[in-house]
Image 1 (cartoon, rainbow, N blue to C red):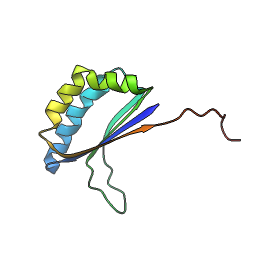
Image 2: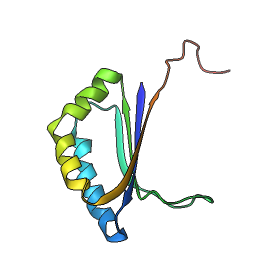
Image 3: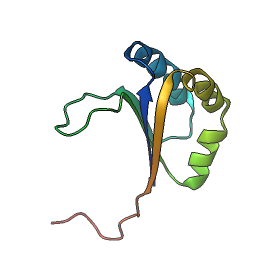
Image 4: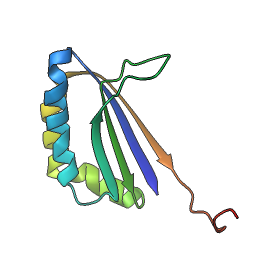
Amino acid sequence: MIRHIVFFTAKSPDKIDAICEGLALLAQIPHSIKFEVTRNSRVDLYGNEVDVVVYGEFADQAALDAYKAHPNYDEATRRVRPLRDLRYAADIVVPESREGPAT
């Protein structure tokens, strides 16, 4: 499984809702196992610069590639890019455990 996490900062606070709306198009792409777009709750003690977080889980690299190739991905990018300042992405490969749950 791959966890795809993307952090966005808005150019200004009044753009955050529009960023969330643009990114919501990504939830309509059928290749994810789990998908969320959410505003940062800003409760961290040391840093709260991030405005919006995208979190997706994908079965494998092929599913993540299919997600990025979907037309909604390009449309979301077109809508959000002019509104956002920074974008940081991380893809985390989660190895399948060969062991059962801890007892």
